[in-house]
Image (cartoon, rainbow, N blue to C red; front, side):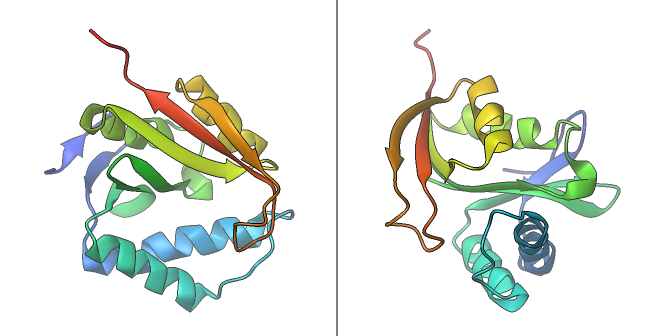
Length: 154
């Protein structure tokens, strides 16, 4: 994927130097979300971002020269989709998800049951719930759910 300009941002493959911004967006979300236990340091978030970028999973949304959000996806498994707090509600997440939908016939992701905003976002974009868990299989120990989107046959 080369850089693609969408309404709210320019989407492009993440580069190694984006790891700090990508990790920072994850850290900010964890810090600002009262129900989410903080189980990783900022340095661990950056290292995780670096690993996802090195695997080629990450596209970033850039606006005015800054990373405003990112999505990490491998083979239709959406591992992460985060938007910086200052850019939320401006179409960045929709643009990232739209780019993934053009590349994949189906997408699967999970989110915490407490993340009502994410659940509403995915449902608005055609995802349906396929499973729920008590959280015993995730690091945070929080109940989660799995969501799936399938492209309609033409």
